[in-house]
Image (cartoon, rainbow, N blue to C red; front, side, top):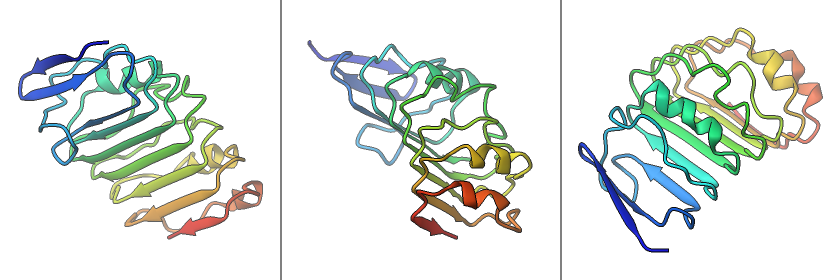
Length: 173
């Protein structure tokens, strides 16, 4: 397939629609700087298995992540506006193995259901995050091998459900 270039405001990305395996959006990625606020949804990328979104993004874009059923790794970072995720944002991501929430400074709530397929979960620098209900979501992650909680001032105790995480071999606090 040939390469295609799409431009949205200051956003520019080149990709072969069917051959993309890893896609980065953001000012520190291998692509040119972008503003995600102008992007209403992700294009149809049936083979993508990694997605990294850095900086501001809107709810429409986050909702469209649910359609990326082959996604194995998702990273959201450096967002100063995001307070919560769309309802059922991760529901169809049955292949998702790695999930990273880094420096989402105003994030208050995590998705209510995390994919059971998760093997690695990192939550770092989410200063306003409330962990109510998170304990229940965590106990269903029986494949989880690595868990990282750092720079979370609202985390005052560890969940009681660690006994359900038999495969957990790495815990970083």
